[in-house]
Length: 180
Ligand code: C2R
Image (cartoon, rainbow, N blue to C red; front, side, top):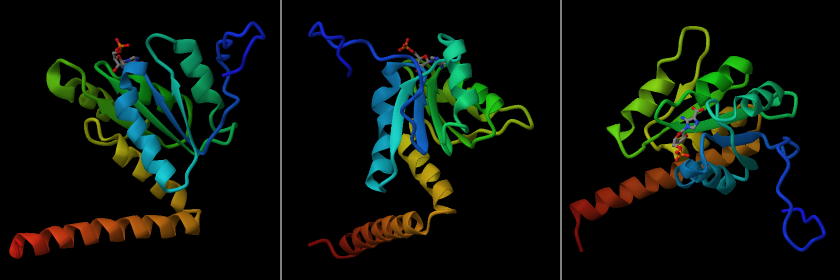
């Protein structure tokens, strides 16, 4: 965090200078534990990310500025997570043509159904790719798959990842059939 010279860290500016190919945004810092799984999955694949709190409801002007400028800043995919009346992914999809992946974050009430339905039921013409409730890791992997269509090295790392999953499933099968 930058310092203002007084010893205490200066608050970060609201601009969008830090850009990454995949940006993870969320409606509130309370979504962070869930949403950081997207960044972790991408980090493991060598894909840079940034994380921001941008709310369609609480900071609508910031959300508009963020969404409108994202493509020009070099962003390729936006992952947007929100809970409850989760309008953030859809609102971002309405102000950019970048692919937006929505993550329904489960809150204390309604088990995440409210978030899921708010994100998945977009009007025709404004798509949001919706993953499962709290499934931010899958959002990260989906974003990587999108980038991998133009990045053979990343596609290779995704193949390795898939091989790891297969080996784990085969190991489970073996130990089920032959418990030691
Ligand atoms: P607080 O914990 O800050 O009260 O937020 C957030 O994503 C969070 O899951 C509770 C929930 O409100 C959600 N929120 C949205 C939006 N902004 C914040 N759904 C939005 O713009 O869609």
